[in-house]
Amino acid sequence: MSVEYRQHPAHLEVVITGDYSTASALVVLDEIREQAVQSGHTSILADVTGTTGAFSSFDRYELGSKLVELFHGRYKIVTVELAKRINKMVENVAVNRGVNYFITDNREAALGWLLDQ
Image (cartoon, rainbow, N blue to C red; front, side, top):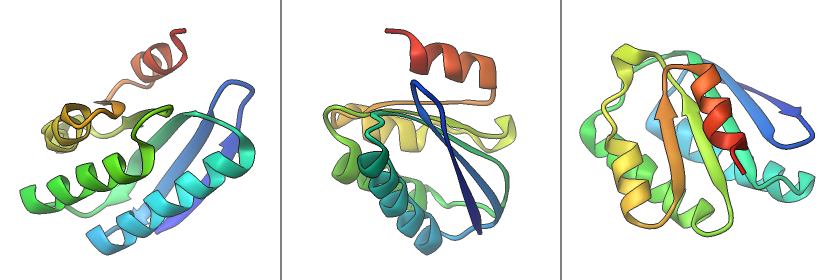
């Protein structure tokens, strides 16, 4: 898995590519939080459309729980994902526990939601 960070004036963009697993995704979430703290960004766009692999329902629950642990409160996070891989489990877990999170397959919609003040 490869991770590239791009700092924009209003948000941190994270582009993730390659084969992924739950373990590697959990590590990347820790790294994203660290980058956000270091850069001072509270709005984060994660593009995972260039990844390969699949998550089970349990994996998705675990990822949503990790989002709660790391990003509950002042952060706003959106994930751009391939439509065929979206089932809203991660979003439901995170949002139901207080994370300002959205997942979509549309980059324009993602940016619109993220940057809507």
